[in-house]
Length: 252
Image (tube, rainbow, N blue to C red):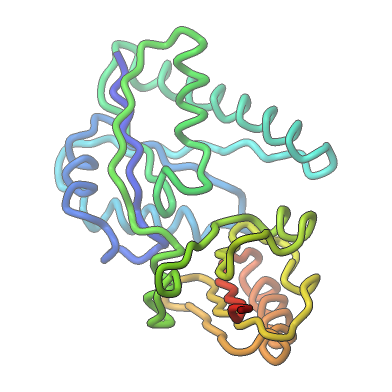
């Protein structure tokens, strides 16, 4: 039996770790750290630092190469094949390092519940017949860090907020019935497709990290600055993780 612990680690700041996350890491027989290529070496460096800071026992730490998603295939098909490949990689590591079962930990950026596929990949292992129990240690999400960094509430008084993706915003525009949108996984600044008037934006990249970058203001003024800053940061670091909140003035 594999006891799989999916541990939310926040957005790269070791101080985001909960006591429960630290306990689960130290109770694990094995922690797997994914390598995502040279362009994203900062990500595994942060995971290495977290392990070095908090793992005090005999937990083994093993690195493996994470498969890449095909950027040229249709999105959903590409993600489906990519998840199959990641499940294969997890299975290979389990067979090599925990052949008789044990406690396995994976460190998940943010929280496993929010726009992360670790739980779905674990389901694939179960569907393939692996004896597996899944445990989740919640982590601080990028959305929480964004609102904290800007010192703003997620929602306005008694009003809903919607979490969506840049892809959905670009394809469908502003959804009906909400005045606040939190936008994740936006590789192309989808806010540029919106009419600027009456919309405010709060944007953040590398949240919680030493190189955190924040911009806020009316979209008609801040949008172009965000586009320029984002391109510059991506060129400098080779990768970027960002998120933003959009708020539209209520229409009565």
